[in-house]
Image (cartoon, rainbow, N blue to C red; front, side, top):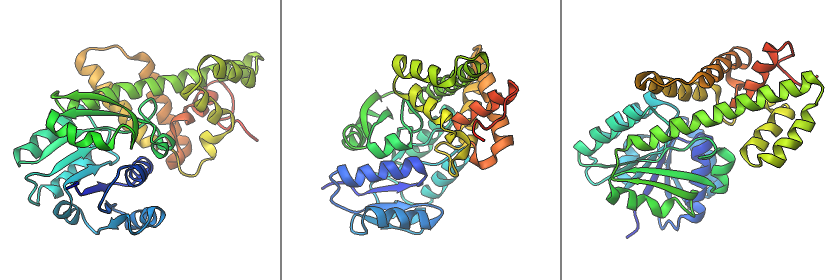
Length: 311
């Protein structure tokens, strides 16, 4: 008999992943949805079909009803808080899959806590390209990184490649924290990519090359994420969007995790330090509207231009 699935946390990434679970996961039972703000669950349920989803009022209801429980929350404290509630219930035989981006030490601690109570645990962090962004989650184009016991990973794989994602990176029988370690390091590539694009576009503007000429070069040489972020910068999306695709606070959290790991292991990461400082300026200027490509505005300001590139 197919397992009963549930999802805790319905941010941008979570909603897209749930959409693909319902549409392509061959589920024979409604997907259970829980979010702290219930309206998010209700809105998603209405969009996906009330016959294909079930909205519940609390994490305790999720645990008692589901066999495989996905978690996708914003930070370490939120994930630990959800697991605290999960462990108030009987969890023996349950499989918990954490799709959040947290510090690897947090992941390893979660694995220890849950397996000690008879549950199974797999880490499968979601997040930004090249792993995935909200639009990629909607399209089922994520890369799913899975770590944990091989027997547990095998239970999650029917819902990854071809359903929520386009490919798997399999760290079976490795510590669960390996998946979030890869995710945190991988996210530094994104931050540094945005930093380089921001600096390049500012230089193109101030030297007279022109940002559109540079964008043509980017599209030709670096199609994909580089071109997508370049488009968002030039269109002014980096400051005009009311709801960021990846909130500046989450980006800063990921940067702090990476910087902490670098310090602990004795790594030099000057580019990441610069990007993190620019994220702080983004937060100061845009507040909750800040997004990762908003770094462009911070670099513009430092170079004597307005933060916003449109009048």
